[in-house]
Length: 605
View 1 (tube, helix red, strand yellow):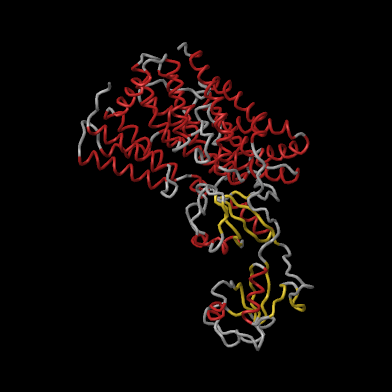
View 2 (cartoon, helix red, strand yellow; view 1 turned 45 degrees about the vertical axis):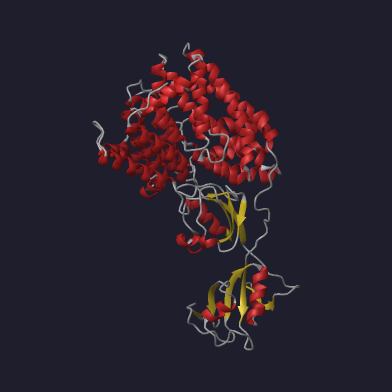
């Protein structure tokens, strides 16, 4: 029976469990939890000093090589997005889908997996989502049969190299800090190719048959907002009243874009301006509300483009030039953790929000949309002109799913793609460490004009940074206080009767269960020192146990909260939580069984 460790170790273990619990709570931002954990650790070792641990040493994690590398790779991925460097590939895939859909699905899975081995999978998913949604609409195929296999394929591909995911980089970096051999870029590609091949076959041949047909979450594709003119009649309510009084008469629901007094005179829409007979109020709202405003104010309703014929059954409201678009909120976008009012969305983009689809509750939200705090994975249904939707798409901070026009593409796209390939080549050949190669790549992106400093800043994800720093700090504290050793002793005590291959298999399964509930980075960082301690206690090689952490932490297939691209996929395909379990659990079992067989064979366990 393992002996209890010192009090500091017990406190750190309890704090680790608390952090894991808080990471699962969507109501608490990840960055808030990360900062709180960091502060508590620092205060713990200031108030109760422990051996040689300096409280300020936790600040060093902001400059950890793995974190710097992750940030640089995020910026490089943003360069590919802003230049549209992968657009030619998306165009080829789009035409292939219409001609040979079955083979196109296999090609999509392979392309997604291979690209994700070298790039963060978020831009891959962001690039493919609009293409696949548009293809499904044109071909009459349900997106729900395609989008989840594509998203999970990118997670499989991310396991294959050290730069495939931030989790891989963190585990490799921490293991090196603890005195283990630093893995090369392709040192664990072989087991991933074998196990991943089985996983991709499952996603190609079996997953589409298991997935149900899900209708688009916003099935009404007809415009819902109408631009119209309310003509102020002399015998109505409005003449002589201030604009604020007129809006109060409609319970504050009427939105006035502008007020026209004569053919050439527009008056400011101040709350104190007094309306006169003959004034024309330019408004935009649903047909039902516009008719209600007409009756309430005693005004006459006209179409903007037809000032001679009042709106009636014979002359219905028209929506010339208006389009609908579905916009997915992504992490780090201008709307993430903000409200539409705070971001001045309508004024900035000239688009009117009609509804919000919540990724985690599978419900549309109505009412006062402007005051709802948005989260990653939420989808806005917006209406506006083609030009306004194009402006939003080119802004690059949100994912537009209507796919009526091409993704951004500039003459610098080949330059950006060449820089990425150069970074991978220099790192793979061992000429430069991946951290140095990635930073050089960022510098070249900026020097060649492939991206601006603003793009680089937008690419940095504060929640990701804080959760990594907090996880590194917890891992450091667990190692130095003996907490990791205690957890490893308990794991060995429980699994003592089992042979080494089954202990390794159990560790993979444990990490898989953990990563589907909490952040994969947090699970991996905290699990790495524990895995090394387990291997040392049973006199086994440490490398397969380190790989068990990498592979297990990347298998976040079974829940939509396991990885943030799962939320994007959930929104775009209108999946339910159980849909991820239906596909993710058998995929996890396939991959787990494959790694259970492959790793002991490769390391003679």
